[in-house]
Length: 273
Ligand SMILES: Nc1ncnc2c1ncn2[C@@H]1O[C@H](COP(=O)(O)OP(=O)(O)OP(=O)(O)O)[C@@H](O)[C@H]1O
Ligand SMILES: [Mg+2]
Image (cartoon, rainbow, N blue to C red; front, side):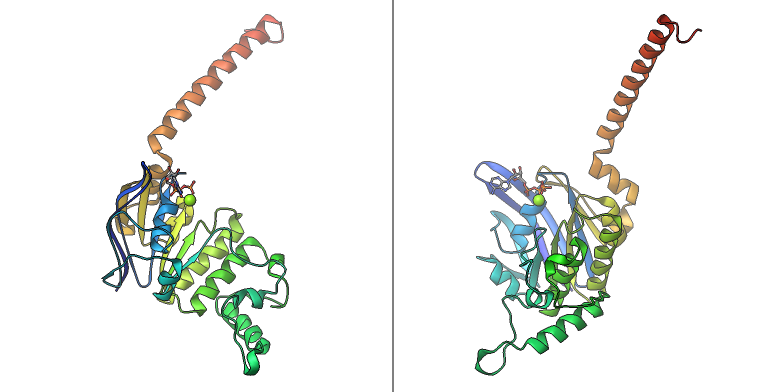
């Protein structure tokens, strides 16, 4: 089932064209990766999906119905949850408070049902393979990767159908990034549709089912995994040819520098022919 469909979507900021003619489909149980360099339009695309901005052209459909959102709340009501890179957490509050932030469970007389929230947070995190010793610890004491995972588990718990992740692995080391990638796979296994924004083809390829590569607001490739190899994806991302030219240039610089050094050495009598 297709959850999200963008068809030839465009967006301008004044006279800056941030996106033009971009299409993307996300089905349940699928990970769609959006790749591209700085300024390519990745954030603009997910702001449209998550209801923060409106598109100027093209169509946006959720489960087959055209939508134009006025706020992220409307997107959330349709099950589209966005996890931003700078997570909106309160660092000194316990993990369970952050998990239920804005959706606190209450019992009689408006009192917080702390017991329920603690237990639920613990078990939801465990289901995703995160075994926290203590859900009372301040969320600020968790690693960046763990915090991303808490945000993902939270979106899943509150019934997200589509999970939008803006560069969740960007600031993480290899091991932490691996942890987050594992949860992306878990979310997919649970039948969610995932939109995963990243700079890194090595993070995208293993978990992605589709790949959209943006460059200066345009789509330069939109492929299913069957139709692209990791090498091709990397080349598209890096602007492969540009990289090769750069490599050649650097090599010729270093080899000419090396021969100058050799001549100097000879002149100074450090070496002979
Ligand atoms: N609010 C805005 N007003 C004007 N121009 C904007 C605005 N937001 C983005 N842009 C421009 O639109 C283009 C796409 O930006 P966008 O933030 O979507 O790129 P990105 O792919 O997310 O880049 P990065 O990898 O740096 O996050 C850029 O040229 C950017 O300068
Ligand atoms: Mg961005």
